[in-house]
Image 1 (cartoon, rainbow, N blue to C red):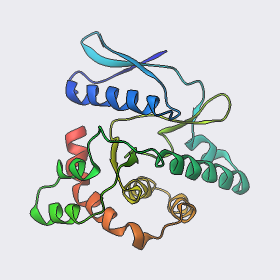
Image 2 (image 1 turned 180 degrees about the horizontal axis):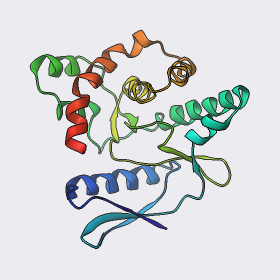
Image 3 (image 1 turned 90 degrees about the horizontal axis):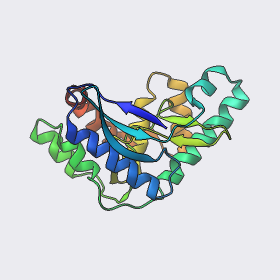
Length: 202
């Protein structure tokens, strides 16, 4: 097992939120470390998780040939599609999540105009939040932003989070079967609230 420790100033409510999300995801059958309990260690709160022996997926993209690179992208895309096949109810909707960081009526109106949904949304799926276990199976980590909604939102989040590498970003979206135009309304609100979201988290 391992312990994920949070900085002393990290809000207890957010840590408990991650613990609940991780527990819910594990019960859904998603390949993710099981969250066992909340702890306090040297005045820092933490979560005890099962330890995953392996490496983060970004290592494969950094080291691989073009052919192997495409194979890992296919695995990531298949994994993401499988995640979004799960339907969930007892979590925050992605619209309510975005509204927590919206500061103007125009942004709120744009959020309200987006599609609803009840599929599992990770909200932070990128190459360093997916690990490979000893059997080269993909394992999802970091459940802080889990919510429910339409898959277009989660695709847009991942597309945005991959913006540091335009080739990875382009291939991801292409293999997911969407165009930039498809996800543009979601990208728009993600960009509008991103600064406030990051300042609240960090």
